[in-house]
Image (cartoon, rainbow, N blue to C red; front, top):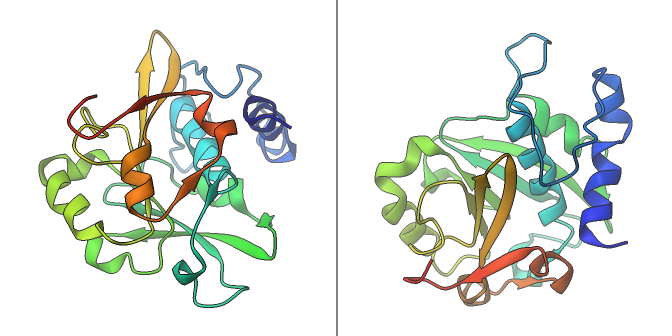
Length: 198
């Protein structure tokens, strides 16, 4: 199943129906409206981005050395302010990729993100992005963000929102330098950029 169909199927899955809203706009659309369930939920934009984070874990291969064991989970982390709330946890709940479960962890400092595999770097880290990315060099961590010039500065996957659509920009060279292999099924939906040339 190709990348877009996989995301759409997740968007139409039971988790979304359970909240009373099936997001039929697909993986690259959002309405900008917030759901109406307390505690304050993420916007529809960040609900879609949460599904992307889940799918990134399926379309990226990590070296065996990135895991403590063959059954160790794939860790999706959020650094700094969390725009997803509990929604990201609900998206990955009970999901597995091969023999690996998925778990979500939150970090205040990049130094605490040991063992993380997909790391969303929030807007609260904008002023220290270069330091954060430098601390992650040499580690097999897929860095994801929606900050301006994220890939240009060495991040791997950037969400770009234009006219109500979420686009992906991917720095393949940065991913390769971290020992990660990104599937062509994901790359076909992205604009490929390199560090220094966004």
